[in-house]
Amino acid sequence: MSEHEQVTGMLTAKNAASLELDPAHTALIIVDMQRYFTQPSFPFTDLFEKMSPGVCSGYLSRVRETVNRASVDYSITSVRMVRSSSLRQSAPRRRTAAI
Image (cartoon, rainbow, N blue to C red):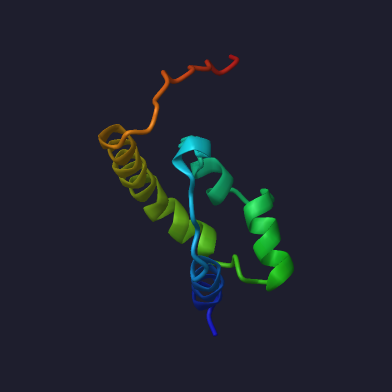
């Protein structure tokens, strides 16, 4: 089984469980996740490596090629869903990076 199939299998199993959200106690928080999911030695890749050694071989380069656009598309869709619902919205807080 390839590392891609291993990761896909783990994510499929995780996503099989239903997730019920109570809008009164739910927040949509969008964080710049590309770095977290595309860098070696971050908790995401460390977890997968502990679960299945070698699983990230080749994974990180594929993610870097695809995650940027996919994350933006998913974020836009999520924000539109919240805006079209009756959920309460608040203005984003902006942080500036230290130089």
